[in-house]
Image (cartoon, rainbow, N blue to C red; front, side, top):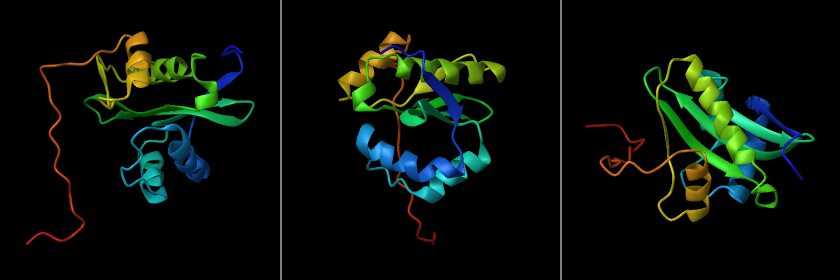
Length: 147
């Protein structure tokens, strides 16, 4: 099966529950406190950020293509396990890059888990590579009020 029938579209409010279920089945590292409200906020703030790949109306892939006005960020590349190695991830990445080019972005970065070798191959095939001189610094924010 080729990718000729793959359609890429923007996700919206009506897709949120299906996308959350899909990430549970197809995405690595889904312990990031995903919830419907956060995905709704994403698509309301940036209606073109959530890319969805479908075959005959069935969700087979996702990618968040976040543009903050300064940088182009890619998150949540996920492809249904039964549809991998068909070019779906590449098509999603290409759609995101096309979107970023319209903003004048000159570079995109992707969040990729260190241990996800399958993802490493997909990102490498699209021309991405690790940037060893940079590290990601993280602080977990609490919903509790500050003193």
